[in-house]
Length: 90
Length: 90
Image 1 (cartoon, rainbow over the protein chains, first blue to last red):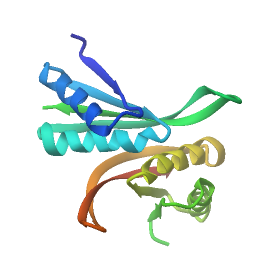
Image 2: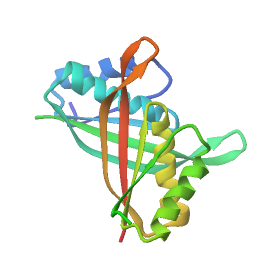
Image 3: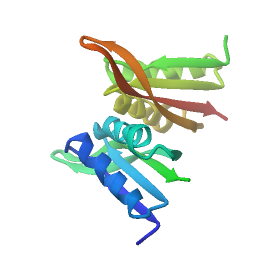
């Protein structure tokens, strides 16, 4: 298993992503990246907080980075914000 | 003027907050905190990215912290995620 695991947060219910992250940690991952773009960014923060507060209480936020990505929209390329939240288990 | 300036991102259009942050920097602020809760978190990231990419190009993200806050909802207290993005001008 790779050391770097990534969960992309999108339109599904928040608990789907929480369980995906918890599963990664329980399978031995040392750190998990929670990534999202656009409006899903708020949900990515929810995922990180729910994982830390309710499921993996020894997980910590190692780093949070934000950036801008270009995506293909209906009217050509548009820019969206993106986030990457890195949770680590001590 | 205090060294620590805070902009709370809410329901107004994103450019309102962008201009508020830009104004703080142009008035001499060394760092500005962009704060939001719940669904406004995505907009706070947009604000930080637009400020950095279009207006204050020497501004950098110093730190991003996330947390959980309790707010009074219609059905008693509920928990919401929160973010604090610190932009600094070098």
